[in-house]
Image 1 (cartoon, one colour):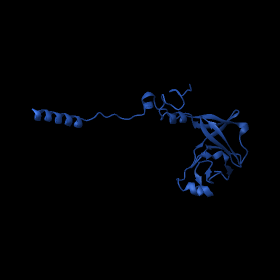
Image 2: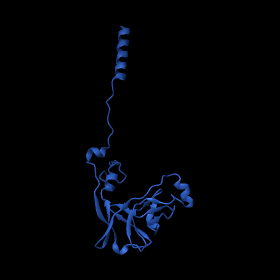
Image 3: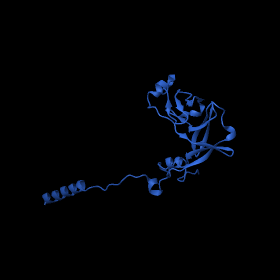
Image 4: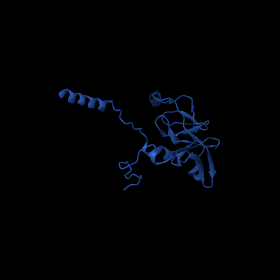
Length: 184
């Protein structure tokens, strides 16, 4: 009798360990609740035309929720680039504009105004040599610009910020307060 109950116990344990456990696929909860936000390119106001910087300088603005550097070359051509300068994301709009490039004011890297690519050495300044060696050279995004009425308009993906934020969980413990992003 004892051997039968021992055998039944062993079979029960074997069954518990050999039964496949249900598998759950991990998905982004946001993806289950909303359709994916796609890109939407359109011109958005960035700065008033009266605030366009003088030739050889740059200023910052915001278009469609994105930080934008507005740079004016010596010939008066206006360019829009991303205002976060790699590799440490300081504002590019503090840089000097010359010869078709804007120079990172801290690390010394020059970026082509038309293409956003690195021109010349990567991070050539003193501290730049130390920091730049830790990162691969990378450019900055460029955007089409046009004057329209009293504004300088920049063509950006107006859904970029929402698409980026869609990747992150939002709920009861959301850092902004309530699940809908509003404050209490």
